[in-house]
Length: 399
Image 1 (cartoon, rainbow, N blue to C red):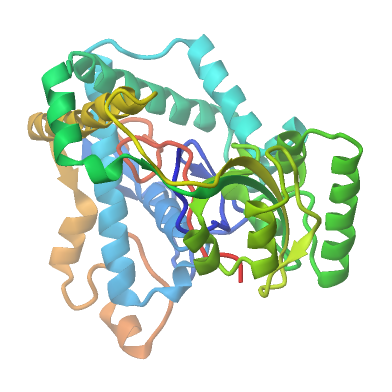
Image 2: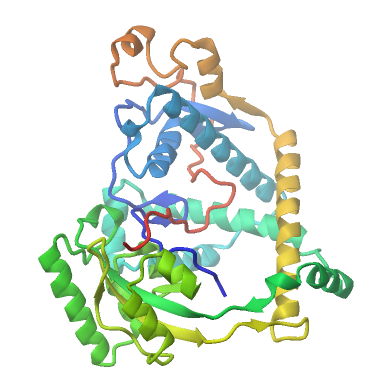
């Protein structure tokens, strides 16, 4: 069970490695698509891809970065893109590429998890100048890299002795704490249309009308998870039908849950019940569903249901992380990499290769890209990650 330390709100939605957030890249950066930031075994990574990654990291506002921060962000994003391309090429060599049917399935899952209709999904792609071909290529890389990692991590074997030793040394971790598991539907009076929310309330009156309408839907026996996916304005929980995990009473207090709501959750409410609309100090409206209630803290033994499996999975995940890091290290050592962006920064230390010194001195915001290089192969577009699961960016908890 996930333990939530705060209820998350999100401003941008990532589908595969592509951010569909209605934001424009740039922030004062003049970038041409044919600028080559790096090559991996002769394949180009374009500077436009780097700018897209920076745009994602800054929530569509790269102009908020100063010159040094922008340079650092570009280097980090490019390094992640290089690692991703290296891993994909390794997957190609080891012949673990996905089938077209698997790619179709991955994209179908992305559409479902986005909480958008098929039409809105297509519109968002078009607004971001992202073609379906590009989206398929990203899915191909995601699946290939995951298959490559699974090829090696599939050999992991956790013994009973390891499980027992871990439990003995970490007994304090195996406690079913007093608390509740919750799902939620959020309506925010702020304008969140740029984040991919379609049914977005943009002021207090709209928010109150929307949350009341949602409450009426639920009273009409509508499925909570289905309504959450369709109408909630919290992107981080859309794909989970509003599920925010397990929280202790202290967690709820720390996240500014009203005392009367906490009392109700631990008191009269039964599992499966949902609250009336509740407005937090932030002005946001919430409806919470009680998915699980635990009134007493219980110490678990090694034979308690799920404990052995939990330990085994945890130890397996630890080894996977180490194996994935080792796999990346080997792949990087075998690859021929030319980082043109980094080289250009070294050649222009006064302005880090971002813009002419005269413009930097006057505070100009235009930003030429690194030296253009002949294109050797199609650009390898991708997110700034070795593997790119759907991601979210945490913001503030309800207040």
